[in-house]
Length: 248
Image 1 (cartoon, one colour):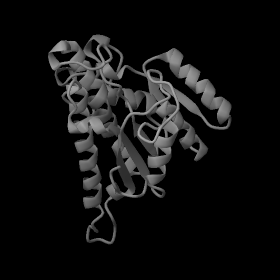
Image 2 (cartoon, helix red, strand yellow):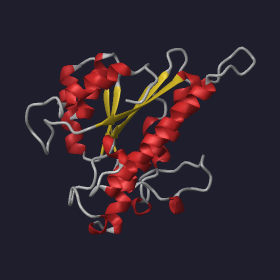
Image 3 (spheres, rainbow, N blue to C red):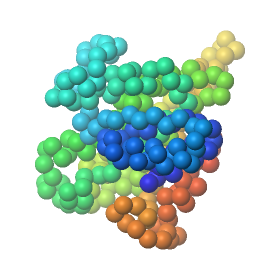
């Protein structure tokens, strides 16, 4: 729901959007709704399972080597190869990292209730996918002149550590630290290099947003409240804050 609202907001701002998800049917349904609302905008689909990101042992030693990201699904998803194959040639100015959702079965539980597979998939979906995709697209985002570029990392207040959500909380803490640190690196790069030019990294704004619960989603229907607003209210709070150079 939040992703759809953000996409509508970006399309309203005049941007074309690439939608990522792992369920083709659901993506096509959202795509049709978006096209109806913004017929002059382009909405492309990128289908990939973020819970199956390729581990270090199966990644190429040469970081620049290519290959098909889905050539051998037993090895897992090579995010950099996916980005090169699916996004190469596009003029990308905004990256929104909003993949996640926690472990669904059970939604909350003791750490030992979850299998090795569930924990590994949680790390892949909640953290590794965003890390690899940002690493793959950041060089292109840094070259967007004039106008700059924006990276939005959608996090959670669970990053402080919530009982019965150990993996989810840990992954959100990782994401918060990663993107806050990248934002600090961007600030560091704004220092004049002594030749009258700023480092190209100063052209990318990086914003990490910490969200709490929302209502009117698939697992929780109902009107929003002050403590638990709708996704629209959440979006209204943080999307206009880009440019504020702070963590929300």
